[in-house]
Image 1: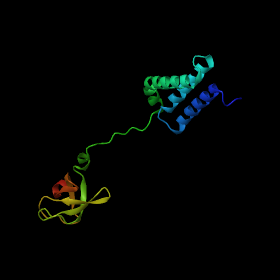
Image 2: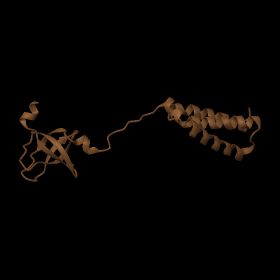
Image 3: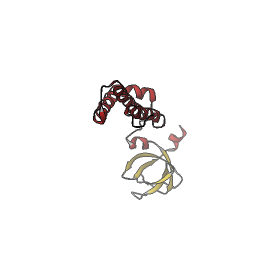
Image 4: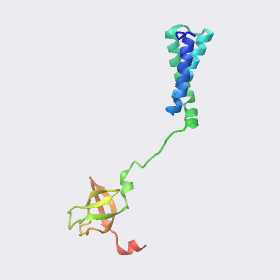
Length: 156
């Protein structure tokens, strides 16, 4: 068996690409491997000769296969697709946090614990003591704007 046989080389490269799809899923590499097998078949029946024609056929068949079968391979192979909320303010709004450092009076900032870390916080102008539970209203730059939770609201 001769390693310089272009039919064998294209077929082996195509099979390696197709097997690589197991390691690198996504549905693209298998189509590139299929394009290699198309070139190997065209070389075997004599439609193309030489490296330039082989590479041209590979590029054309790879593009055609990608445009034609990309949706099919995506459905078969799948993949991770997760859409998160892109507006961070919505994730912050109405969250209950605990005051770590007294906030106020006035515009004196304090600190609250949110998502496992401490954040600077601004209040509504009153003094909010450390240990109090507060609700996040919005964010102003990097500081969270909070309001105290009323006793009646926390009972509900």
